[in-house]
Image (cartoon, rainbow, N blue to C red; front, top):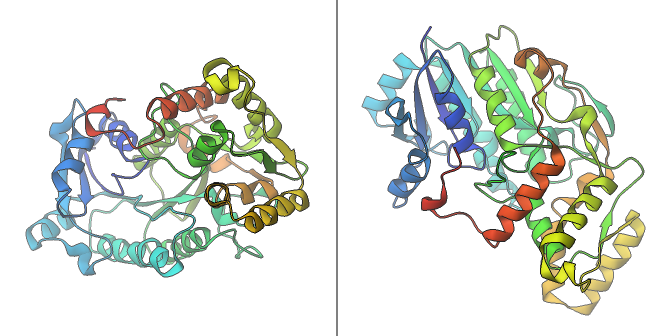
Length: 373
């Protein structure tokens, strides 16, 4: 059975990999990509279309999830309503440090608008919401694949708005699957990163020797997955029937990385590849308890050191999660996949991402460099 899939958020970190995987799935006849209109329209279309060999099945539609009726032209709106079988809603503001109302407008109200559009599609088989494992907030221990009451607290407003978006989707009266992704670090095959996020900024400062310590508690682990693995799962999920609400953790789960192992792997690779580390001029970060790290933060604030303040601001969006160790259940995600998730070797992936980031000076690749698929 052929399907038309509507994708939002294709210009984000996951987008290029997701489009490539969707075009590789039998039974998907067309992939319609909602892109915000504006002066960068041509550039964004080129970035997304140029790496794809089957681009004839890819169509781009001007629209904006923060506008009423998605700001769709009447012709596009009517055509999509009659054709769309699956909506993959991946658009989100993922900046942990963003202002609350700004996050709410995109992550909550934007989701509300896309759901309203999906309700008008008579052929709709599935609304696939791309969410985040971060909705567990400050919870610790096992995290099950179901909607839960809000945690005692959220680490940042981003987590809260994604939690609220899940509630909207669950109450929409549609066939809904929620894919909660853990941290997508980069392509496991070549380290490609389409858009650098909080973990990459932390790596950037660590490589420059500006992260002398990392806060942690007993049992701290980092749940990382390769971006291409997440994209493959979402493409599989898009053609897997869903009847009732289903929540899936696309995560490493039992294979989450002990923090010490991740630091040791990163440092060992830097000792072999980066001059300052090779010569011993840069020291490896020390893993410390939260009280020690807070003392360090206060000393930086008193010193007035602008650079270190920037480093702490960037790292502060990633480090707090280390204080709330979790183990994500992946039973539902594995059922969709048909077995254990195809996780990449995390050590190889981390090394490739570091090499890619260093080669690009941790800046977003130019359009001509988007050739990873």
